[in-house]
Structure formats: C-alpha cells, structure tokens
Image (cartoon, rainbow, N blue to C red):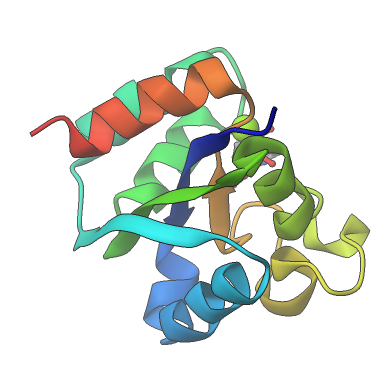
Length: 136
Ligand code: UDP
Ligand code: MG
C-alpha cells in the first residue's frame, strides 16, 4: 500500500535573494511534489538556533544560524509518496560541488553553506520541522 508523506523544505536566503523561488517550486512540482502549504518569512537568529539545534556542537553552527536568519526564506510542506527521501534526492549533496546533475543544489547552490535549500532528513524530523514552521 502506498501512502502520501510530508516533508519540510526551505528555500534559503541565497536563493530567495536571487529570485529563484518560483523556479525551485517548479522543480518540486515537475518532480511530482504538491506544495501543501508555503510561507515566505524572515526568522530571528534565536529561532534558527532552535531549528538547527542538532548542529549546535558543529563549528559551522553560529554562521549557519546567522545565515538562515539573514533574509527572507520560503518554508513549504511538500507532499508525495516517499516525500522525505525523494526530496533529499532532488536536493542533491550538501556541497553543491558534489551534487549530481539535475539536482537543485547542483543547479543553484553557490557553496556548502549557501546551498539554496533545506530538506528534512527523516519522517520523524519532518514532523518536528513542519510543526516548527506551521504549528499556528
Ligand atoms: N553546513 C555548512 N558547513 C558544513 C556543513 C553544513 O555551512 O561544513 C550548512 C549547510 O547549509 C547545510 C546545513 O549546514 O545545508 C545543515 O547541514 P547538514 O549536514 O544537515 O546538511 P543538509 O541536511 O542540509 O544536506
Ligand atoms: Mg540536515
């Protein structure tokens, strides 16, 4: 039996700043995702710190949180069968240099930190991340 899954996607500040949000949304739609909900917002650094708490011991944590809160982002709930894993595949590797052809990060990513999109890495984290942005 197949079932529809949800995942959280974020179009990060580097991509919103370059007006790539429409093109990136089209890539999701072309690849079978439905955008169930979306909102364009700018978050505080303190909120980014909560969102990326799993990375709090990493050397890049502070820069990452400054970056995510540096400008508008588009947060979306994406839906399709196997949405979590399929979104990770469509995004490509964290470092755009290692991302395969046809992936969002290969096409639009600038660097390992400015890599244009976020995507939940498990069904469990997708639930938490969706709740973080769309609880209200
Ligand atoms: N990141 C970074 N430097 C690194 C590794 C990661 O700036 O050496 C940033 C990058 O923006 C990445 C985010 O931290 O998207 C979260 O890292 P993660 O390993 O979870 O990668 P992702 O799940 O986004 O592919
Ligand atoms: Mg991750």
